[in-house]
Length: 392
Image (cartoon, rainbow, N blue to C red):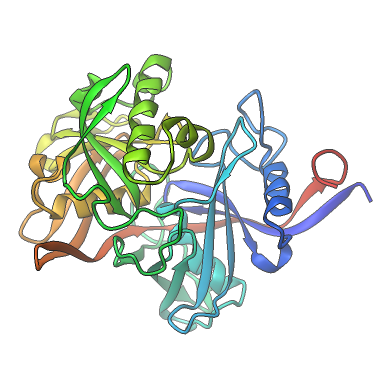
């Protein structure tokens, strides 16, 4: 036999794509599993394109998802997310992808892992196993299938779809926390921390654990205005190196890595680094003009060493939570309105998010954060993996 054939589904969730697997079709040994998934996605690729695999050569398209029935009474399925490095043999299982979270419910329904009504709204209770967090997905159904067509517009996606609402429950709580997770909403105990970053300087940052561990800084800390697009950031190696240095030192401060070097080598996916600024006019990547009166602030986020083309789903969650709490880098720029929502501009357009947070005995408690996404099944069948080489 020249190749292995492994059942898989290629799915879009939000502004990301990934290869989805049922847990029972993959090796149980983590090393063997990761070697297999690296070969499936086409990593590591010294050319950075992943031509010989299912990855798309970007942080938004080099992703894998594993789903199984849950043994937990409070969940329907368990969900693992892997951020696959393009040029190194690393899969980072330390965080979540909020975009692909939108595709977990439809995948689980189509695979028969959960029961769903033929029509109406299916509620899928997801245990995000990387972080030990609950996500509730509200999936519209039609004739026994997850509905994909609709008029919900998501900036960063060319076509409209059916809206899937995601509730990230207690995104900063310590229930289910594992050794790879940060503790508490603000792991350093303060809402704004000064990071002393060699070669960069003293950086004021909000280190927050919501959605994914995230480091928020003011755009001016990187000499930026906040309205930059990928073409303005990603070709600038010096700028990317400074951003990575800040992210890596944030990881150390949050207790996620022993050193900045370790964070860069072994934990490229989390924490995320995002920069924000006051609302300003700019032209999004599709040519659409964004006006300051349409948004409360502008935000950009790095993912796997590159500026993201839109906004990560978990970055949106972290931003919503940071905006809801006074005296963070985000809320000092744009506190949420009376409805608890915050509107922000990203490279592909705009997004509205919200979080429920309240102060209790001097500590801030986040009940949930809510974002809307869409998802679609792109291809189903088997992925083929050569038996020779790194997998055999």
